[in-house]
Amino acid sequence: RRMFPTFQVKIFGMDPMADYMLLMDFIPVDDKRYRQVMPCPPCGAQYAFHSSSWLVAGKADPATPGRVHYHPDSPAKGAQWMKQIVSFDKLKLTNNLLDDNGHIILNSMHRYQPRFHVVYVDPRKDSEKYAEENFKTFVFEETRFTAVTAYQNHRITQLKIASNPFAKGFRDCDPE
Image (cartoon, rainbow, N blue to C red; front, side, top):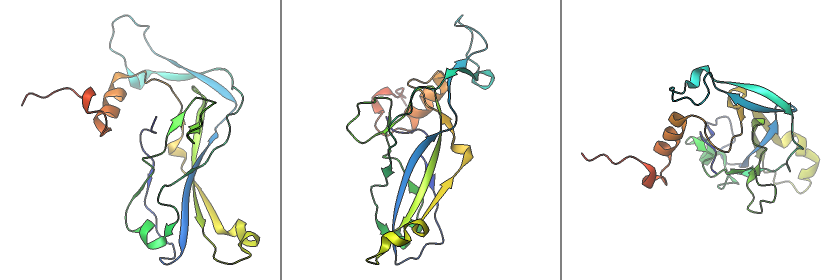
């Protein structure tokens, strides 16, 4: 599945003529597994998203294989990256440990921190000597999330459908 909401970033400060690769990976926030607790069991009451919470449900499952997602436009000139918002809308997540499509594998009900990496494509023949200075990692703590297989909140489901250009068949028909 595609990550929702999509990670988007505005970039500045690059050398406009240099080549860069943009990529993302995901690291576990902690060594715990979570479960969502709702204020009222399924009793017909309206689900209150703002009052639900995540509780620790035990120790984390074994770590998934670490994978990296390269932005499909990589590598590209700094000028291209800086001219508009960069969207990772092609990034796909899965909980399938046997995935062979290159998707990012995450454990459901575990917390993750996305990391955004900018890699300068060094034209020097001995560029591996400078590898450490040729990349920068950015972590935005507000992008932390709990991986789920299904949304527990119908409003979030509707928001995703409304935002998904491929979900035309799921949208309510407006007769007007």
